[in-house]
Image 1 (cartoon, rainbow, N blue to C red):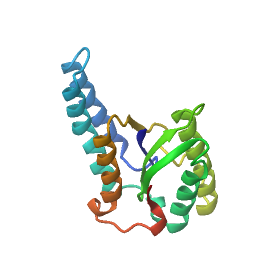
Image 2: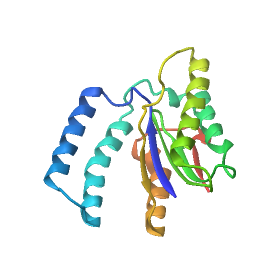
Image 3: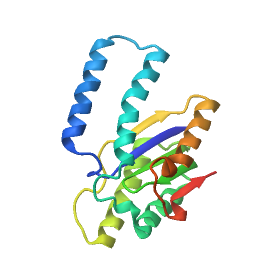
Image 4: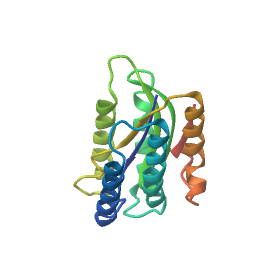
Length: 176
């Protein structure tokens, strides 16, 4: 099972992201070698929380706040549920998506995400009459390692709109 976050290309200012990457590199240099479980959790909390905070501020075009673009994204996520992966949960936020899924045999996460992002990019760009990159190339993904983590990520997905103090369209949240 994977917990994945992917975001619109304009959701975080380049300057902020460059500063974040520099701080992360310094942290990594201060912690050489194999990390302990506690160090991995510390790094994830420190750096993941900053990204989540920026995303929840609703920076950028927030194209996914439109019910039609949100519906395109939601339908695309459901399309391969049962064939390429087992969908566990997702939330479509105004400028990013959190997703939890388990790839089926013969299917790999990078190809699943590429297909999902490519299709939605084309469809959303057509709808809003724009061209160019919609999604940030890289995504954040984490293997869900325990029932406790799975529960944590499900709650995170469920509560993300409330934590960001926003309303989302009804089709933008799914929990199996």
